[in-house]
Image (cartoon, rainbow, N blue to C red; front, top):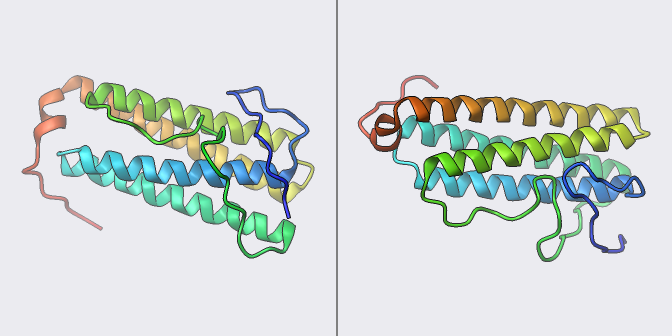
Length: 176
C-alpha cells in the first residue's frame, strides 16, 4: 500500500524524489479535477458550440485519467489507485473552479491550468526512467499543450465578438 504524504509540485518545482506511483497519483487526481472543471464550465456556457468544446475537453480528461490508471495498474498490479484525500497539489495546482462569471477570466484560468498540467507532465517525463512511462507522460504533455492552444483560440474568438460568444443559443450543431 502507498504511504500518503503531501505531494511536492509547485508549478515547475517538482521534487525529483517522487516515486513513479506518486507522480501517476498526482496525474490521476489532476485529470479527475480537470474533467470536473470542464464539466462545470460547460454547464455555465450558453453558446452551444462553445459548450460542446468544453464537454469534449471533459471527456478527453477522463480518457487521460484512464491512461494513467492503466499505468498505475501496470506498475503496481493493483486494480484501483488509492484515493488522494483532501486537495493535494496536482498538475494544475488542484481544485475545481469556483464561481467565475466572466468568460475571459474563465478562459484565462483554463489556459493556466493546461499550461501547468503540460509543465507537470513534461517535468515528470524528464525524471522517468521507464521508457514506456516517459512516452506516455510526454504524450500527455503534448495533449495538454494542444488544449492550451485550443483554449487560446477560444479566448481570441471571445475577444473578437463577446456578444456572439456569450449569448448565441440559436446555433445548430452540425456533424458528429
